[in-house]
Length: 437
Ligand code: NAP
Image (cartoon, rainbow, N blue to C red; front, side, top):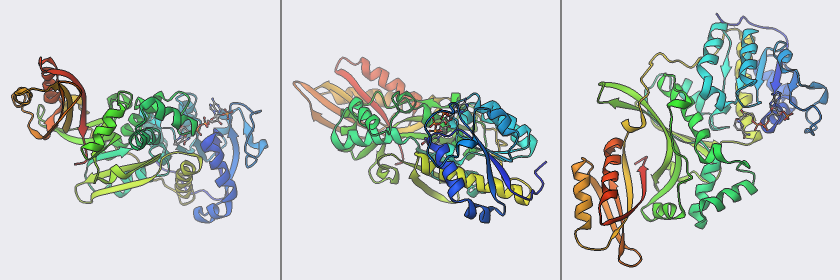
């Protein structure tokens, strides 16, 4: 089933008039003529749902359009643009809109990562579009690229810097030697981080985007619970400084990859968010400040990178409007756009199933034979060494930085646990994955 052509103006309901909603209303209003020409029919805003009618709003928002009755608003729309955020009532309102035959555009990554399959299935059954470009990496057109442009290719791996707040924080730690708390406070003062930065610094926001990207890239349903997650809160100024000393940049990466599972003999999908050492020469190492970037490795296309502003009212509104134009065109011409597909249905693998290069930093006693003991344990666990760097530390201690060849995560973790037990090892300072090499 898919929508028949519609003639005449298309009715648009905007749910939410905050950072993004306001800019969407602005573009719908100020670009109305251009949008009508691109779509083939004018768009009419039939209402803007908010919580508080008395809140101060940008003058671009006509006060007569504001309503607190989002439910009746969605029943009068051809296109519903959900920009409220959160799970409820956004989820129920989207389902209501779909059941009334409206196309839906949303930027709600949290909802899609938690309950996307329910929404996709409802839209599919009703024959309406559900578009969500702005849910991953703001203005960066990566959803469309993975879902449509790469639909004929086989994606092997997606590496993303999809959280601008943590990218800014890590950047400042690297540039100024700040510790994490200071860098987060600076980001808050500049409006890059929320008063409660947990969703960003603990990696929840990136994990939601990783789940969405993985679902699209591997045609498999991946939810937030499937994503292995480690934020940046354990990183120290020392970790960042040592990254630079060894020719790397520390980034919080969302990584979705197709992995061969030795146990089952099948391919599976592994999705993780964790701090990673990115070699200085890799394109992702140069993504600074609050920018987002997604690096895709696929069989035929090879390597692709998408870069741009990952947040902010206007950039995010650009992605939302792109979706609005697409779904509105489908209304005018009849039919609907491509859907996310889950036909491959690959198993989602646990975090320990991964393989990567690692960098392990140790504080050890500065005496002969220490390196041999550490190397013996690595060999015992089939983790081979790519490089070792030893430098004196305070007193009779030495600093050992070991970079491994590709090793299984499970073997690496077992090795590090054994190394920590050695009498000559004073502390395991950090264990970080090296990605993008
Ligand atoms: P925001 O500034 O907090 O705005 C939320 C809006 O939704 C407000 O206008 C609020 O009304 C309204 N709202 C909230 N709950 C409501 C309810 N129960 N009924 C009616 N209205 C309700 O949020 P935002 O930053 O624009 O984000 C919107 C969405 O875009 C989220 O899903 C977010 O994840 C996503 N997104 C945001 C960005 C960004 O840079 N901000 C980037 C990418 C994606 P009041 O104004 O009356 O409070």
